[in-house]
Image (cartoon, rainbow, N blue to C red; front, side):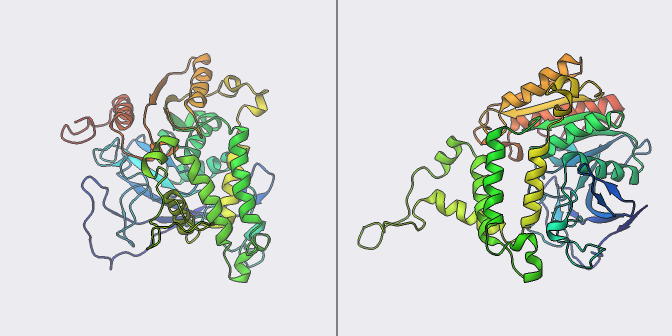
Length: 409
């Protein structure tokens, strides 16, 4: 059984929103009382999901698109938060009226995963058995667990089959898992800047980030809530490590180069271990900002879920066998300078799908921004996604796109 609560925003006045935005948005909080059995064998007795929706679900209930988020994102995919006019959805350039994912035609669902720290049940939530925050006792999670919870969300909305499941990075893993675990419920699977499994190097980066958190004196074995503390130093370093991997070498060179901060009044530099180069200043700023809003236990859980994802593992490492049962059509997009999840990983998925005679569209975009390119404005990238959604709309008999809107207009 599921219950919904919606914050009262009646007292919030309208504010200026960007052209083409879905406008002011506020989340729903949907409670699921039925226990969720997890891959680890543990059971989550009940949970709440923070959700935002954009557009209207049609009478046929066949125009729904589920957007899956990456490591540090949330349900707030598009529009302007009704409680904070400075909070723009993390994929607002992609989702909205007349945009690539056109909310004039599609009903778009943004969901915050369990284990997160943006409204859904997670480590900072109260454990009903103890009356205290879950902390380190929160169950381990996998991508497949998120998909099971999301499938219940689709049931809640009365949606038997999603027009598309879409995500970038970790969100792309969830989209791929949807196609594998719920093949009858996915029309199209859109996987952007993602991978069928992490490389040893990626697992290594995640482990360095986790150790920086776990070794922080304020971590207290994951139960820092009881001490009124946050392991800020560890979180900051974890974010710095991650942020380096999201940018390409060329992008960092263009943004920062080897620019050093201004010398002292006498023209001499202060040699030492303080902030000397602009890139150092940038990374420290990003790390410190991250430590003010993200939960350390959530970071540990999410990066471990990334490590565990490997649908081919139970098929002798054969990805084609793992994808034998999929029924969705696929769009895969990769970026030439993404060295975290390089194009070779997307092509691996493409080859496995072709072995199974699945319909696949693949685009490799030569963008300079590294892994972060999936979040940025690139006319070629957005045109590919828009064109693909136009095909989905035509197949489902949805209204045509307005000729005065969208990146292809």
